[in-house]
Image (tube, rainbow, N blue to C red; front, side, top):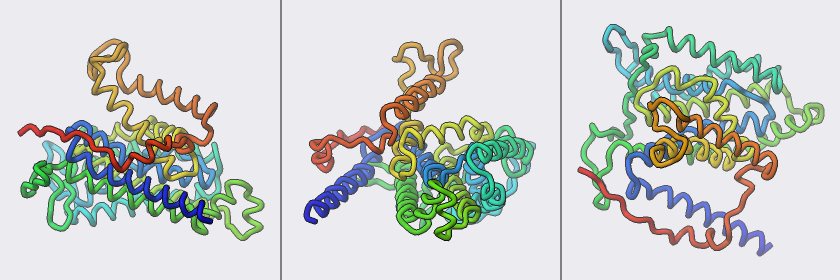
Length: 371
């Protein structure tokens, strides 16, 4: 019993140390790394939702990018005021940003619920093919519903606001410990809060009755039905919850990039999300987070160091391989390696004991701020 308690205490201490470390980047990292971290946070939330569907419920979705688009454009439409952008008149409800974010998540959930009669009855590749159609339908709608999406040119994203404090540079100057907190620094903690909420909710779902029912359904539909699990109802519920996670991730992604265009939400994004949960570890919220960080950060880092790396050309330079292409080669290789040698994904790996013991003593170097 004492061994079990000591292990639980050790895990709790390690998790607390990780979360404390995640509070530090705005004080030490440059703008590029903060924005890269925000991209990763958005994909962490979306990947957690997809992992609930694929890893826990045993379903397959190739249309997750559609629900990210619903969350992103839903937030913009709900939060923005009606205005003209050149020759295009853009609609909006002008709701408070936080309420708009909640509304965007609910819109994505409604879109998932509208598709639930299909998702509740189809399985595996059949559902994957059906959801793939959502990406192409969504792309057509995004390009033609110009009053909502801005069409091909996209639409700028209204800033988030919490308790009267805008999470952009339009608010009052905030300086903490000598570090000026601009848009990215403020948005970092908001994104971190959303990730913590997503992880907490996912863990409760996985460890609760609903998670056990979905796991039983994934392992054997007949056995789950005998135990009182309604297959179609639970699959539809898992699809709806997964869509809501995607909507939250899409809204945070929109806040991070500040301008949303339809081409961001293509089929390749859905494939990237699938790669995230396989590399990280199916059926685990922490695994989805680890895989999402790996896949989301890799192309950004390759683009940042493209001038110093062989065979990679900086973005926009003709010839050679782009950072995005090389990133897909690399995490394609990572997929193969994970499937062959680490079936449990990155989450099944364990940090060395000495590193776990020193997490709380790490002290990074303070970043320099340019005026």
